[in-house]
Amino acid sequence: MNFDILTTTQWEIAIAAVVILTLGIAAMAIARKRRTEKLRAQFGDSEYDRALREVGNQRKAESILKERNDRVQSFQIRPLSVADQARFRESWSSVQGRFVDSPGGAITEADRLLGDVMSLRGYPVADFAQRTADISVDHPSVTENYRAAHAIAIRQTMGQASTEELRQAMIHYRTLFEELVDTSEIARAQSA
Image 1: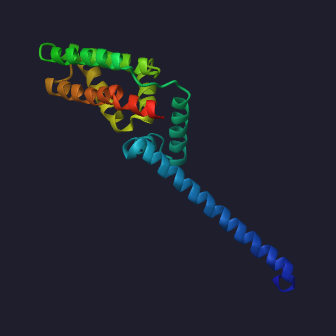
Image 2 (image 1 turned 180 degrees about the vertical axis):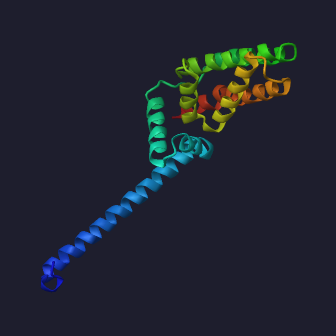
């Protein structure tokens, strides 16, 4: 192409096309950055980085997190009633009380109790991996604790967990339990 014979109009069109292309690329970069910031804010650095490590690609990891969010948004997640909270707190106290005499049994009961709380709240609980993915949408700060506690519980069933590990598992389970049973959610739901 001979650039010497381009008309002023052709130059203006070419420059406009370059400007439009540049603005489009910039807009896409800004949108991608905002999406990343939003997902990091929602899921927390730990869960975001975990998804990134698992798939090894930012675009795929963000797609997975978005799908996770969309999946959970389709559920009917609800806060617990005051009566259910009281019942679960009483059950939790009982589980913790049994820890001294039967740490392994208490861990198994704690895991089951968390499943009951999640189920009543509206989370599907059939598969652990899916359960943790679902929980990470609304409770990202405690998801890693839940994974760690569950791993210890599995080792406990094979007789491979120490009493100290079981104690750590109870602490991890308690952080998720308290977040799932939190009374402030009722206040937030009623004010919305």
